[in-house]
Image 1 (cartoon, rainbow, N blue to C red):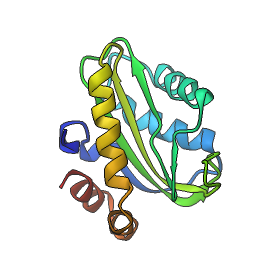
Image 2: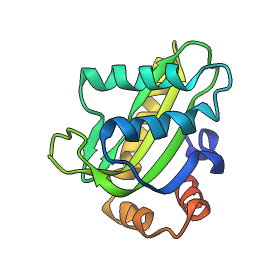
Image 3: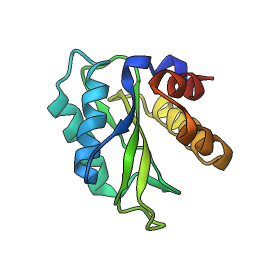
Image 4: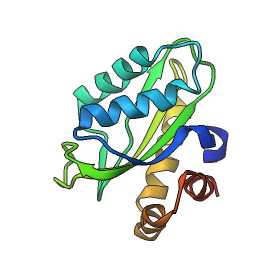
Length: 148
């Protein structure tokens, strides 16, 4: 699975200023909505928030991967936000989050969902990679790094 298959430059944003996990999820939902014209921002936010109620999608070390399944979409869609300031995300390590990769998959795409999550988690588990993500100058540089 390659991230360039699910992530476009229009769904990458850096320097996003939010003050809470809820606001961060709203920003990710807005970006994901750009790639899912058949579903609303509210439906996406509800899917992401519903998954968060089952347990935090924070990986630790400042990274979160909020994700959800939705009917009405036929392919997986990704979005990425680098926050201006980290926010409390209820992570298992207690560290605030500033790198958020949102993922939506079709309702019945179980194996695809797991493959995408594993690929994203593997990438963001690399401290060197996360350092490069933090250092990227703008949205285009972030997109290039994420999809390389």
